Length: 60
Image (cartoon, rainbow, N blue to C red; front, side, top):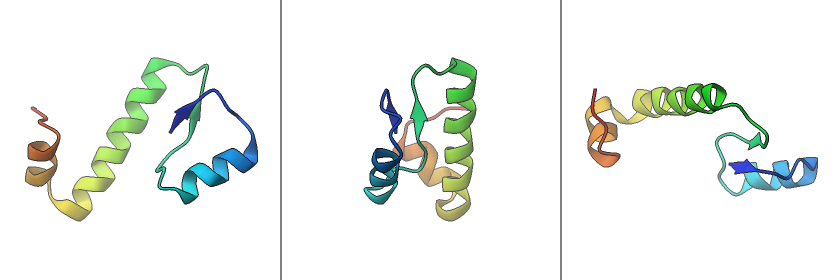
């Protein structure tokens, strides 16, 4: 979840509603990219790389 809101209650609600991560503005782009790659890496462990690449139209 990418947001400008930093309140702890809102962070908890974000995770409860399905967020895998919570990043508040102002953020730097390299940190965002690394977090996205980390989520993709975790997802592929459970679902297999072929399904992930097909679902999100990723190319290596």
